[in-house]
Image (tube, rainbow, N blue to C red; front, side, top):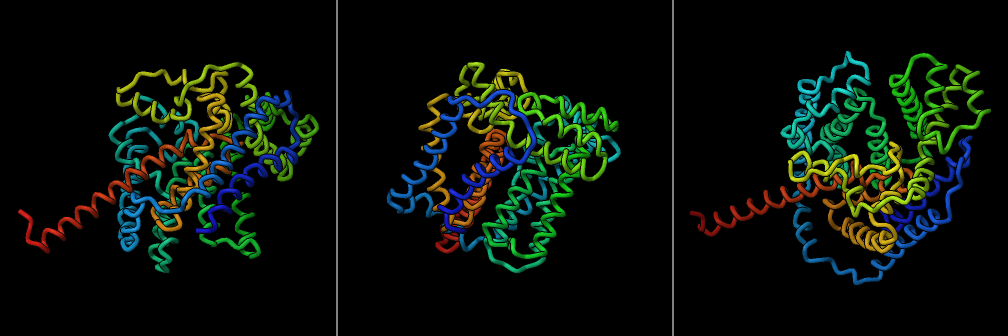
Length: 427
């Protein structure tokens, strides 16, 4: 991996740069200025995170004894990759069987119908949820491939194939989040392993092509949710909930409505993306102004609460641990932290910085920890935009820890069997 300080600080400042860049270039109005309270909370959270990282850097760099266990897996890299490929592929097969056979998802259906059918509670199967859980590790085989420094094209093809499998579900359900997160993680992977050369003309062409495809996909998803009528479409979009706090400027709306061509659609897509990226901070400020009660972890650990409810181990109304303003928009990572812990989130951010430093540092010596590091780097970049930790992060993090436990159990058993055979000690 690259220098861990570069990865950490780079992810933090890149996220801040992205937010300010789109805030400046996007023609939006701000209905209510962000309060000094919110600015102070976000600033102290960032400072605490960075101080925690710096503090951990000064602590003795001796590797923990528990981490020495990971070093024993170095010689088993390729075998671990094959095991993971099998698990991920099987999970996707079961996932798509569940979607097509049990949840009524079809290629012939409109996106909104597939989305409705897939989300219906009566179509949910706890068994298939368990059996297809490893699909969230679709990006890990590609990481292991680059970490192994192997040149086997067949293995690369399989890893890329697994990485692309979530895009089919994204297309069927019209999920822009799946596409966005997948490509974001892919970009980080390629940067960490020096697979992107921004000076290359070929790279720029591919990048521009991907951006065009993404904007087109996003536009088609929005239209499928509303109407094919251009006037009605723009009216609905510019009057949706996240436009209430950061509406597009009137002259920008008029330009789009008067230019029903590629230029108008491109301008609309930029405004829509800019609002998506910037509005979370204003939503957070609005949420704080309502003086919400703290949820003590239930907001950020929403996925676990939902899962425990499915198991019957808890009965917490999910509506009670959503955004208390009853709005369906993002409130950033910091909004989630404040909602859960208030000002106590500041020392928690310090501990979060310590944890990231130790994880990134250990990843330099233990390839099996690299996927976890990439998840944290991704979450750092988008802290000001949405709360990745509340959504996909916790699920992926947990499933990957389960995978690590499986690896240890398998190799421990193999080593024990080898010991028994060598010493004629088996019964």
